[in-house]
Length: 122
Length: 395
Figure 1: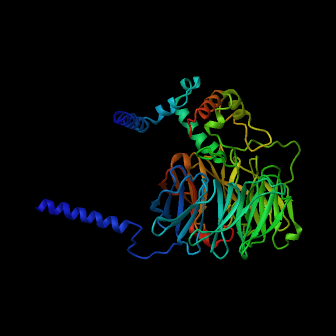
Figure 2 (figure 1 turned 90 degrees about the horizontal axis):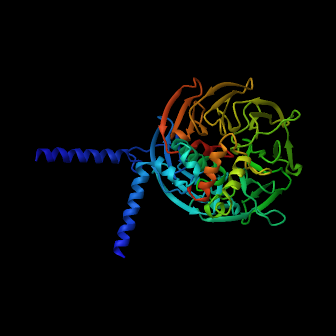
Figure 3 (figure 1 turned 135 degrees about the horizontal axis):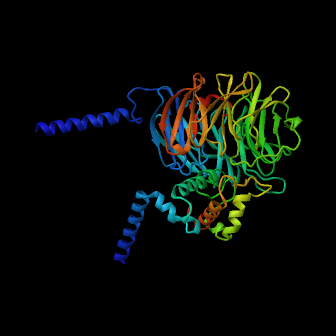
């Protein structure tokens, strides 16, 4: 029991250390998607900022909703990546959700969709 | 011994310096007229700043989720009421640099207002939709007004402002209504304007307390209510559109803030368009659709007159422009950096403070020379609010 606790603490502190030392690298492994290997770490950091702050201006900084609906993992994971990325690129007509094609590429939209499904931005 | 003595006196000096610098024990009493709060949205913190010397006095933590946070002030300018996205209402003492009261009053909120006499603070909520009214002294609940339409469906509430006579006005996003709540008596009295317009996104009251203006997202134009003649209902002010004009996608909901200017014009962001509309308050006509750099988020008139400063939504949120009120043309374009989210004028308009979110700083510009006067570090800054708001109806 005790060793398990120590083990957990060790892993915890390693994670914290990793997060402090290399935020880029963490962002990069945070989303498990084929696009992670082709989108540059710098762009992944920009996209992460965009999800939190720009998507977040309607959906909440913590993605739990605002003017827009929540983008939390439990809701997102129920939708296929392709559906979500199409929604990001095309928007939802008749609502305040705009089409983001032009701001992000289809590849980047798939990366964001995968990240939302994995709760990577929460 | 000598060395220890030196070390000791150095420590004592350092401590003395701490005490003198600490805002919690000011050595000299000070006024609050040049104070303000900067919201650091991602870390749940506010900075207490002063705009005479353009410095940060203290930071106050523990305010929760401050994305889209806004602030109103007690009439003595000492306390800021901070409305957080997570439903938190936090009372901050600017002089002592600390939290003196906090309630989490809803699941998801958007803004607030302080009553004409300063005794009440109202908060507008998304979840559950409605407003709640609290005593400014101890944040105890006075009234709870759910925003339910005739079918019992809840709406998100936006555009909450104070009106003369202990009243608050606000807009219901889904229901397309504007309500006025009179909280002067023991139970709130409601007046509803049921067909104001489709999806009001924000609202303002003119400085004379006469007109409530709601910007509309779901259709073109703004809804206007003459509060001196409420029997006239809500009317729509429409721009004179050309044929075949398509709206652009809106990446950030615009805001309405500011009074009609001395020249009788109100400046409104053109939703989905690279335009600011100059609207003549007398007669409510759009006198000019001013072409600008991007989709406006804020179009705020300098209290000193003659200028309107505008910031923009993605992908143009690195730019700020200045419109000359005399010619209704853009006279200056500035590029402070990525993510310019908000702007606030000093009380007499000699300077403007801009939050540059993505570059983690707040910049101060002269409104006369457009020269950058100062840059202050801030963690993902969003709203900037000066205590001069305490003396302005509708703020």
